[in-house]
Image (cartoon, rainbow, N blue to C red; front, top):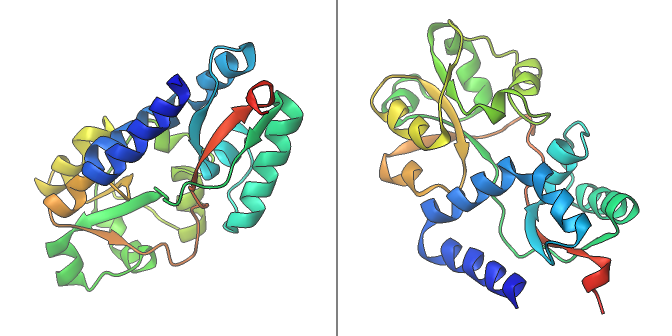
Length: 212
């Protein structure tokens, strides 16, 4: 029952408040590796995880972009390592979002991450702490796109990044695609035209001891 309530609350947050829902994602992504232990020890009956987070941050695989391949790999390894089943995706995804101010996008005609690369050497970027270390985070993004910023990125809590971008303290940030602040602050999400980020489909992970 508690597990069902947890899922209902998450889905309700998605419908009623994008910023609340993405806060739930941030906390879950940040604690994913910690959640494995109580789940394995019997303390958690069900929790919702993102396939791309499980694939890269927990299983430590380099990012791939095929959703079916990611789901199959995650289901197989979770079953083998932790005796956990993955159910079908819940129908929503929350990927990383590379963002700039609308004024910047309009003046420089930016539509994709590749469009931003020639300008990045004059910019200051802002990132959350975890994004700079994740397998599907900043190091791989810089490598694939050839991104080079003019100075070291500013590291701050995810909740502060959007306002810092809107106020001109930084020029580009990595956020979460479903965060309500993106629209509220009129920020522009650049297309991941080289398909760097893996799929982040939300799906319940359930220990086999809980499966009838």
